Image 1 (cartoon, rainbow, N blue to C red):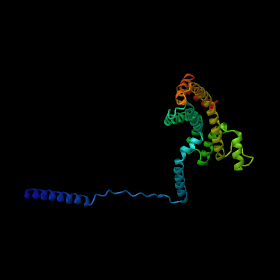
Image 2: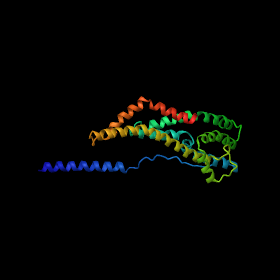
Image 3: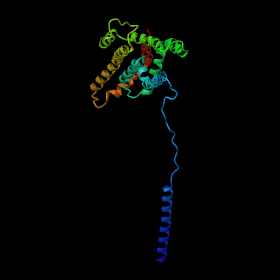
Image 4: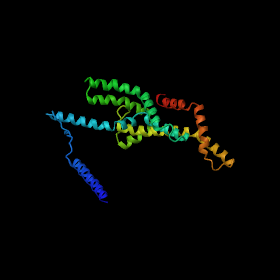
Length: 258
């Protein structure tokens, strides 16, 4: 009995020493990591012009955050990605092809379609501005002309007239000097309308397959079998046999370049 009490006492003593040792380690002051100071200033700005240039740079960096949206809404990307979305819905393949594949294909098609416009902007605005041949205002004006021309070519007159009347820009505005804030929304709704028209034409053949499959299953009394599962292989077979990707991509390219 005494030996047992002695063993319990020794174990308790060892546990107390271990507990106090761990507490001492965690109670010791930790090594601090110095944090560098961050300071935003306009050092070197001695004149009002220097301050204005710094503010312009800040505004430019702010605009860069919304640049992807601006680029998407003023190019052929909208029509292409909407048509691809309709195609996937018509096929009924849910997440195949995945969003990354469709977005990547739409981006590269956009680059292909917009290359002539971007080349003109680079030659007439970007290069002269970087070589200090023209001023910033002139570069913006020259760079907006090819982009305005591309958007107006795809914009319906009815849509453009709607925003011109809403903006009250006057009757002396022509296609050469119409403001971009009027052209961009008109271009957007024209692109959406065109994409929806193409999507309607895409749905028709696949809708016929769905109707035929549903009628056959109902006539056979197979009420519990989902028609979508049976129609999907026939939709894929039809799409592959007519070389659907080639036809859709060709139609989209012709709609912009034709």
